[in-house]
Image 1 (cartoon, rainbow, N blue to C red):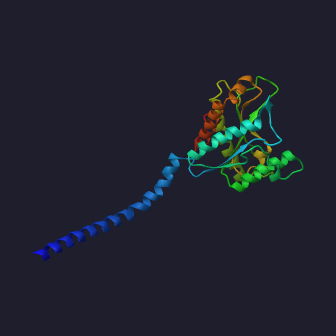
Image 2 (cartoon, one colour):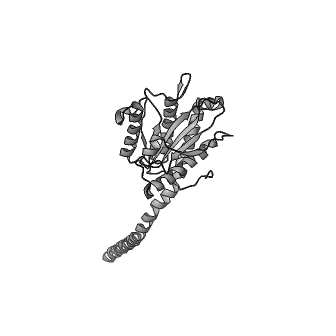
Image 3 (cartoon, rainbow, N blue to C red):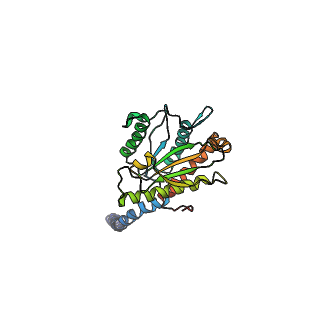
Length: 259
């Protein structure tokens, strides 16, 4: 009788082993299909995950950019970028900064004068980084105090540095325009009544950048109301959040209502 009890326990163990094997076989058939679907679903839910984004705070070092009293464009642009970086990190993006402190990039570039070396140094750093897009952040100024609000520039179809206009450049310009329009749309929401727009331009950075690029002037230091906003850290945080939203929408494949 004791021997029969031992056999029945072994039988139950054998039956359990068979069930485990069968379940494993089913899971092996199911898993590859699910693993193929998951990255696509993750990309839809988290469009910035794994993306490499270059951020370029304008000016730096001896080049302060535009100014009002003690406030310099180079410092405010860097502050906005340093606020933007953790927002992108939190969304899963990888972020490359052309500068993280108060210096220019002339030692990285080539050219007969310092400003050209600075700009070519920025381009060289972005090219080496392998970034998928570049966002260059600036502040604006004008002789007319009536000009206000953000303005965003994108790469021009007839302004490639080497003069070529092939299919690859056309696609890059189209992506640059879409990025700029999304940036402008998000920033205009912070400036009620803004009349500025987004435009193609022949700036050095736009002509030479190896990836879709938007150069944004986030407001006018020369305009009293803009200046009041731009000197407010809380508003600069809102600018950073707007830029993060624009980048998320870009990688999600969205179109701007401004188009």
